[in-house]
Image (cartoon, rainbow, N blue to C red; front, side):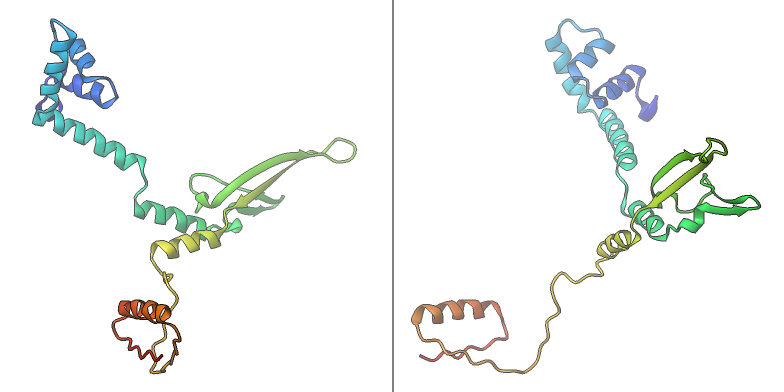
Length: 193
């Protein structure tokens, strides 16, 4: 079996991975005298390198498939940002129509598709009217910019040589100002009373 596991070990690992209690799974695949013995044997089996490796392999596959990595999220957002209604419209001899298929570009940009049939006043000549709504590309661009850290977390600081004189009249304010200034290395405080 996988990772040089026996069939029983493989089935045990799969059961445990799927959430079954180890003792119960052990009891199912191995002959045991009691549940207490099965629990003890399952505990020992779980600690073996082969079972640990199989459980790690199963977990890594699930985690990889379950959560979109950074590149996949960026690709989705880029697809949304590049979405254009003209990508889904075609014009033929009988007028314009929508064409959306597997080969259509940027289909993740589509937020909603609705269709309805409209008839003429006498009930004849039905025409299908289809509307497409796209996700807001500005929001996708904004998220991409945030992912790339293009926005500053703090407003830009302008450093110049201006001097600000602060006249402090009471002792408490002077102590507070001195504590604040201790956080800034290049500040100089001249407090007068």
